[in-house]
Length: 218
Image (cartoon, rainbow, N blue to C red; front, side, top):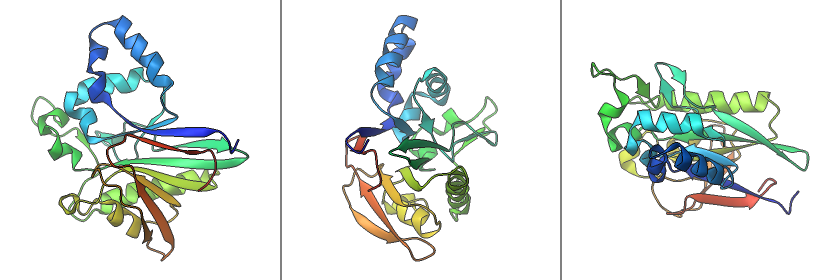
């Protein structure tokens, strides 16, 4: 099992706009997409085609899409985490997407016909809601038997995204073993301290949408 590889991918709904052309095209893309990754997370460009269209793609997807902080009217749209097992080791992947998505995209996509927000990414000025969402997912994954917890994040390191950067999240949570991050298109490899003072490595893939690693802990 340690010779097998797992693909962790950021879901790219934007490039799947052609799904809406025909049911045949959609079916072909569903099949090919299923082969392209083991775990997917949401990233900002996914909702550039509109949240309604994105939700259709989520329903059609034959692969796991995870996000612990994307809500519709107070309920999670996707599962917050998934556990994969390799060589007897249970690895939980927790998905999180920057709340900056709402303003980086088109705000009206997240509103109803009255202009009221029905979708959110658990954003607030302190970052507390996001930290709690991540912590709840991590704790639930541990309670579900995970030996390791990887945070699959689309948070980044840009100050404009504060208080929702990866550094903000790591320093305000515990129980995360590794952070695999995107959004800011950097390739920064750092070790952060969580709120308990324990080291947490953070790796970013630059402009690549994929993380590949062996099916075992780092």
